[in-house]
Length: 345
Image (tube, rainbow, N blue to C red; front, side):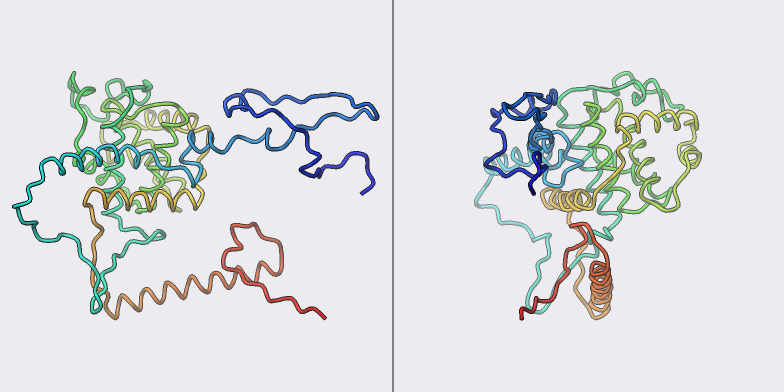
């Protein structure tokens, strides 16, 4: 109040800058030092022009922003549209539909699965993650890669690699067996599988690579290696993976991990909103491809288990509410906190 220069400027007095395209706004941030008639005051650029445009950030980094659509879901929907077209063309009205494979709840029976965003089902999650990798390979734009991920230059086994291995897309079953073997031997969790997919798409976006038949095994292995160290409390050492994959060396694992981190720009943070987005998009992928999560009727034992989980979450938010009254909290932790009504005298 009363100062010549204030950091808070009303919208009416903010400088009117010409609108620019997002790409132009990212090229450079210019600070103008124009001098006014009365005082010598440096011109401060508006904060909206210094920030990264939301529309460009959402498109380029879907693994960092919760509002961006995942890459694997958009690639899978291409095949889904083709399937719908073929089913519409080849539809025969005289053929009676087969038995329904999906279970539906009724007034007397409620079917629920044991997969939640905090505790996903391991087998179903691995199936969905490997299916997402399959669509990444099948509907890739090109074959951009790096030598560190090339299986021809850095083989994972002593068996000779076929000459045409880079031209044959792997089947979903092959990808599932490879990932399932690593998760079973290393005793990794379903949450680690989701984080693996986040790191994989982040690598493809940051490094501008494509996952293809020549590099998919090493890229998936690097993502699993990094996710297991970041997510699990008892991380798996690189030498442990060498015992699972007998023919790979520790030096090769260390080098691949170092390149993976550098290509990620050492950004291994996975926000809770991004994790939840990938979980629900994987469930959408499962529904589109008839990979239903195991459904079981709700009985007394499962109902008591759900009630215990709900009570645990409720107590957790009560503790957050008490802590929020004592000290300041970020907006993310204020969900569910209720304040008492003010009393005006």
